[in-house]
Amino acid sequence: MLWATARTRARAGSDAITQLYNAAKKEGTVVIWGPTDAIIYQRMQEALDKQYPGIKIEHFESIPEPLVQRIIAESQAGSRPAVDVIQSGSLRALRPLIDRDMLAPYPGWEKDFGLDAVYANQRFVGAYNLTLPISYNTKMVSAKEAPKSWEDLADPKWKGKKIIIEARLVPFAMLGTEWGKPKVSELVKKILSQQPLIVQGGTTVANALAGGQVSIAVGTYAYTIERLKKQGAAVDWIAVSPLPVLTSAEGVLKTAAHQMPGVSSRGGWERPKGRRSDTRPRDRPWRWAETRSATLPRESRASSPRSYWKPIRPLRRS
Image (cartoon, rainbow, N blue to C red; front, side, top):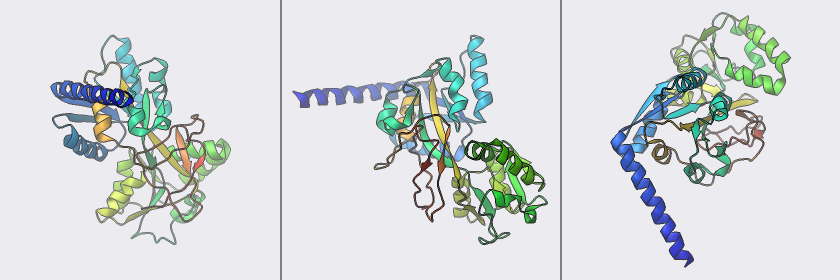
């Protein structure tokens, strides 16, 4: 009897996915807004094509805060937002949508990512982690000379447009929660006195570093630097401590025009087997990776919105 019940439930779940996929194919498109680099969604499209062909991901890259405000404004005006999935590196950016009950619950995330990665009653999921280290151009700076701490960025030897910083100053904002605002404000003043280049966008930062326009970069992701390294660029990143780790959150709007989001999460994201996540209070939209040992944190799609505020056990850099 138990076996028959389990089989019936499995068949019902499979039928539901088939119906969802058929509906998604009729729509043909899922629209995603968020700050993640286009290459991530290119890879997601490749994974989706293998499991659920015939559906296209349309991605609009932008920081989440103005996108969230646009969604709210369009909803208040009686218009249906043109987006299906909203993605953010900051859980706080999605808070206005949660407070207004504008995100749809999706039980399937618990199966795909694990219960500890699902937040706000199944309304969004921590899909993957993004580390924000200090990076450097290996032709212009040796590993020995490269900064080993955030304070090292204030060394006078980096003065004169040798550092490039992403305009939102996200790593320093995160440092403020760990060190306190006075200490970080003083550090930022010293770094800004170095006359760094300030630009918008982590990809812009990484490309400037790879092109030799600057020696040091702050505000681009470790995976971006690793990708450039594989392409032959003379770049590397430093395991400063503490190392900020943003958790990318994904949520589906209740007004989603397309039926695709549930299929996309199954086809495009997968929780690595054997990966455990902490279950600590979910009061900050990031995690700190402790890197004082020789081991370094690994970029991961598995993340836990419940473990942002405590150091996580370091993993070896691959």
